[in-house]
Image (cartoon, rainbow, N blue to C red):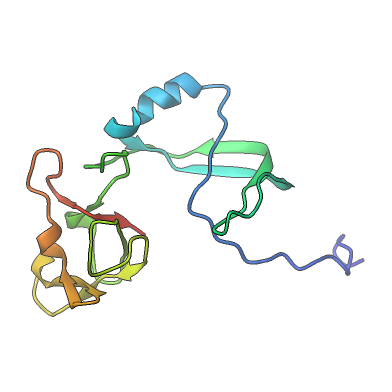
Length: 163
């Protein structure tokens, strides 16, 4: 036994996840009010969850397997106001915040790139949004063409989410 752990303990796998559901008991109504309805979201609330994964919750569906956690602590961070969202309430990337090296994820509206793929923002040397693009089947997809102009989409890169 080394450092209190059995030396024959299994290796923990590297995992990734981009989705979780949190079952909230105390404070649930206040949190729901702060976040807003799905199509009218107002704030994102950062969360840190401490616990242990203790149960396989679902079978492999070909994309993922869900696991249950025994949660010992939940800490919320400072809420941040979000900008324009798609019809499901997911916030679009904001043009003013995107820079070279950022990762954007396209939705299904593009014919030149697959939905859900990770696209790194690059620059053609021009200043501002006009110089930013992501690689696609057509070589370069300029981000300035995605800038929303309606009251509902103003300032958003419609079709792109933050990665």
